[in-house]
Amino acid sequence: MRYVLLIVLLWAGAAQAEGRRLLSRTEAADWRAVGRLNIDGRGFCTATLIAPDLVLTAAHCVFSDRTRLPVRPNALHFVAGYYIGDYIAHRRVRRVMVHRGYDPLRELSERQITSDIAVLELVTPINEVHPFERELRPRAGDPIVVVSYAADRPEAPSIQEPCDTIAVEDRFVVMDCDVTFGASGSPVFTVRNGRPRISSVVSAIGMRGGDQQVAYGAAIDEGALDSVLTDIVHGDADRGIRRPGSSIAQQLGRE
Image 1: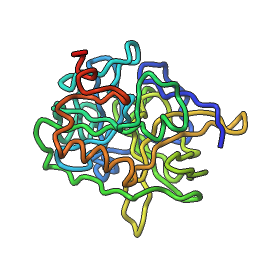
Image 2: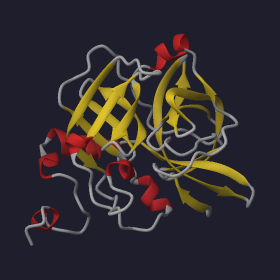
Image 3: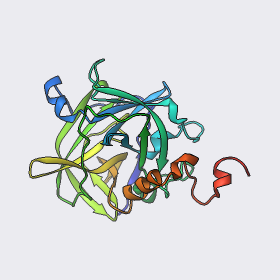
């Protein structure tokens, strides 16, 4: 599978919205565990509560797009259910851990996208919202739902339902969903028996067949999300964001 890849950058200009629509305030109540991740006062991503104190987003959201260095955890601020100035809860981030395979210096590729996963531990839990459960991965042909904040609609969440899963190769997911700048980290939901479950995270946009814009995401199966959660549980997140191929001392700047 080969596609022309273009990363969804946080601080780029807005794109034209087509397939998405704004959620009404009443509709948005069903998606309150989705929130805006504000980044050091300079931009934002979309993120989702997956446990009372854990938020799921894209790994590239927690690195500076200019320096490629990690953003300080206390400069990350999750606002659950944000809607035109109102919100359910907001929390600072205490610790960050990204997938072991993600490297902010590596060129964008299918492999990089499948590792574009980060988990943020909040300073205190959010108990007012029920976190979303997950589906191991979408299947080709599955209808899916994407909820996102975006540069052209930053004050309220948008939804596209349904869009389709075009292909799944290993953990690389291709979707025909309409996403734009700011939607990095957005949850991709698969609906089973009427219940939405997170099956992927939006990472990038690109072109398919030369003229069709598509979205790319990482499936959050056992080999992806679980490894990040294990690092959080075992305290490995205390050393900050891991750089693949380097020692712990190098990661901390002590070598």
